[in-house]
Length: 399
Image (tube, rainbow, N blue to C red):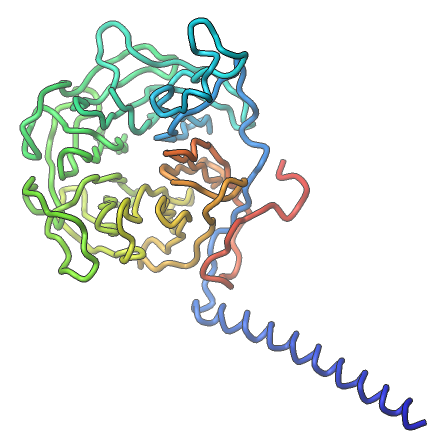
């Protein structure tokens, strides 16, 4: 009888401990959610089956830009042979050393289902293809804008989506610094305000400015440096998180993205900061993101959510290997997702980011990452963790 009573007591204690553990877990999650002020944020899951395999034994080098057009077609641009190891492209040797592989053409277009639509790009008549292409942005008329950050890339190229050359803005081999009104210096990205027929140029890897150009002529209309100051190319030395904030941008100025409500968000990458201006270049506010990040910096590229108010801002952080999710109005970070690694949903040098009309996210990776990934929008949900880690699908398929 005594043994039976002891077993019963032990069982009750075990049940109590389990109940307390469950309660503690619930309380912890509730506390985390309350710590975020009951905030909600967009939720995503990686689609490990997107895009579909490309043909012809093609492989990608550093994927250095991504853009989405009005039909939700996704465009990427990569650097090809120069960013691939010789063993990856044995088939490109003369004679071929093996059946696989060869670099894909620099520009590739995918439909919403991940099928390859077309591929093109490289040197041609009438224009100077970048030594190191960087960034690709579609407009609503079927054109693409391409920059470059090679040693002599002081220009912007405009093509149709089919690869027909339209216009070159600026001149390779010619630049006189961040106050030059005729040429650029190693452009990181071009972002568009089509209603005003203006493009915002993150100018970028050589210059220290945002330049605003006419989308048709390429004429520079205005420009500015950090805090709206006149740009200054005096070397600033390495970023020090304990020093006062620099009054100029460090290179690269990696994005300059206009929002629907007339603001421009600028990625000052090595300074770990995002600065906000009005469209005339008047400084509004700034934040630093993981301000102790050294080397490549934390603020690589941004995209906005697709609601009319663009309530959320997504920031690609290729040093800390995650996507930060912000409330755009307050610049309060709500959550983040991602981790370093080679598996779907993880990153190695996540470089560029874009959204489609359904709110899905697309990311590319440079260096040895060399991937295009899709993150499926799963609606809004309560924020329970500061970082969600790898957002693996909760179902067997995301299609």
